[in-house]
Image (cartoon, rainbow, N blue to C red):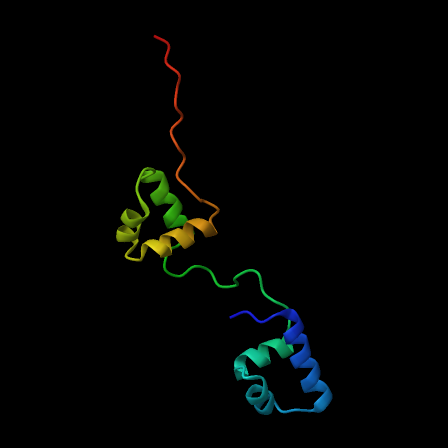
Length: 109
């Protein structure tokens, strides 16, 4: 769950002004100790992920797309031993949102 920047700032400000312990603040605001410690270091909201993908490597997925350009997500999921939604998230991470569609040609005659 993502908390708003205003809420994060308010919690950090109240801890520093009131000299609350982290444990007291966690109980009062109903948030975890880890979350609060992270906010004390940097209260900004993270928009990107620092961790590289672990289940579906980007290079392997791109190679799979080259080899099997017309496959469905469930077929890729079987090859990578993961879920269809996992493949969908990996494709989104790479900026691939749909298969390229075949162009329709006009035929005269």
